Structures are given as C-alpha cells and as structure tokens.
Length: 325
Image (tube, rainbow, N blue to C red):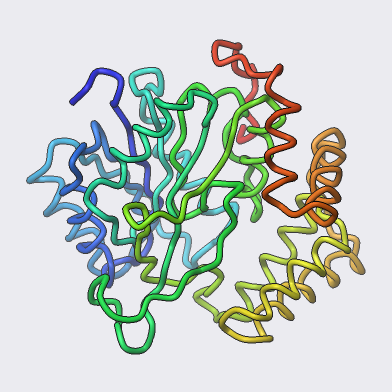
C-alpha cells in the first residue's frame, strides 16, 4: 500500500444481514484495500453480529464497534451518531482519507484506487464518489449484467451512501451535521472553503446500491418526504425545491417520488420546522441554487469552484468545535 493511500472506512450498520456479505466481499477484494474498516453495529437483531464476527476474525483491518439496541431504526441523525461512534475510535491523522460507507453496496474492484488517483491529480477535490445504480426487474441485484437503473445523482457532490474524503478536508468543514441533509450540507461547506465536491458516472466507478436511495424502511413515500424536510432544513428555496421535485417526478417511482419530496418540503415550511442555524451557509447555498436555475448546475458549479479557488488552504486549522459535537 502506498504511504499516501491509507484510507479508513466507517460503516453505520443495523440489521443488514441481507446485503452485508456482498458489501464485505466487494470492499475486501479492492485493488487497494482499506487500512482500517470500523463497522458500527447499531443494535442489530438479525444475523449481522455473527457475520461481522466471522469476517473480523479473518481480516485484521476490520474492527466492530457494538452499540445497544435503541428499539428502532433512526435515520438521519441516528446514522451520523453511529458514524461518530466509529470515527471517535480512530486517530484520523493516521489516515490520508476517511470514508462513510453503507453496507448495502456492491463496488467495482478498482473503486477506491480510482478515486485516490483522481484526487491526487486534483488536490482541491475534498470529497468524491462514483454513481449508484439499482437493479432493474430483469437483474434482481445479482450482478452488473442486465438492467441497471441510475439513481440520477448530480455531479456536484459525493453521494451519501459512500462519501470518500481527504481527511484534512473532512476536518476543515467540521465533519457531518446531525440531521437528515448531512450529505448535502457537507459538500456545500467544502465549496465554501475552496475545496471541490464531485461524483463521476464513469463505468469503472458505477456501483450497485442494493437498497435504492430514498426507499425508507417505511416505504418510498416516507423516504422521499424525509428528503423534502431535509432540503427545507438545509436552506433550499421553494423555487429550487419545486424544480428539483419536477425532475424527480420523471424518475422511478414516476410522479410519486418527486411529489412526496415536494410535499415534505412544503409541509415543513408550513409548520415552520427548524432550519440549519448557519445564515452565511444558507445565503451561500441560495446564491448557488439561483445560478443553477439560471445557468444549469454544471456551469454554476464550475463558476463557484473558480470563484472560491482563492479560499483553498489544505493546511488550514480545523475548527476547534466540530459541527457534530
């Protein structure tokens, strides 16, 4: 392993026996394997603990951190609490990269090696990922052959199910916020500091998401409504949310998914739900979103990356109090 390619994976995990072995095998088979993989068993009641114990006994890089069963799945803040239960067991300065990764993924063999190569080519890339696909009816999640459906994630941020970071970037932005839209706020905070956040839809970086994005354990409608609340919390404007929801209506599940997102946002607005308490961030976000509507997301992102280049300082001191604290 190259000295500057030490990466640590941290996985929140609860009742994942159905997909766990497939994720474990696809990660452990990487051309550049992780230096450490901390898996937080967040109170699983299925066969997850036994599977983790089996793999940890065979692979020195795996460390399992058990948490007591809270009695129910807790998305959003709960996922990040579990992440930090693992993150707080490591010294992040021992690793060049840190990654929050779910355990319902099937990755191509050079996934992490390819990301690190691209980040070495452009040191301003603070966080990045490939693009998720989920199996279509003719594929049934067995392999990369047959029908695969894109989750239509944008190019301007790393995807939430597998966020790969330069450690120093992760420290500078103050880590993840303990709320539903943690996986959007982090990428925007990267750009505020001059870093880049991106995702690529290249064949060598496409991976299978065995549980489609927004498909809450309570159903698609609940998951998409939660996303709408997250957009409200983050500070997204109604005009941008409406445009985003209209686009999502064209993706599976047709109409219903986008409508649920929009109603989750509007209901949060009507009830005056809390918002992310950082006015400078929300102003930055809305200016960017207006430019996206006017010029397209790709052009707006490139313009913002150019404007914020002078802020880039990879050796800047991280905040004394991380946003997760």
